[in-house]
Length: 249
Image (cartoon, rainbow, N blue to C red):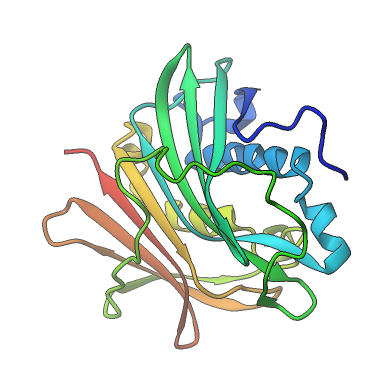
């Protein structure tokens, strides 16, 4: 699609939270929070002419490499949330995008994401083939108090589950959807901690893609002071994904 006449370098979009997106206490699931953030990013790329379908002319797609989400509160079923997004940096094959979620004018979520351009035929990163100079960049306008980082993985951590990748885990790029990794790990967290909203922030690293019928192991360990819990997902000897859940003090 061409660049929309309504294109702006900062986009805000409203979403209504519905009951299918919520946990039993009525609050938005962390997985659906990530979905809403990514759908907003996708909407911005669409009006800016660099959407999935634009990029597929060159066999390209945006894939998520790192993501940090800071949460002060979660919206509830029936709430109208406003998600605002802008780009901090965009060069060649890499982009850093910021997102914020507000309810009634109050910021409740900040997010920083790191994206790579991925050739869906060659299955490797490459420079973006589409023009993007019309996007104004905001390198100093941050949505989070801390940036994303490389998660320290404890290779001796406990194996808690073995998982086979099914068709329902795949997305349009024909690999495991990034939210699925988070879902797999959260299924092994004490439900009371999730329902009490004890997560202050979480961070994800995506390192290697997974495909249909791959078998993986999910590992879990707690940081010594119990301020965080880390998960990793491995295929053979290679780590594909890492998650760190930071707990409220």
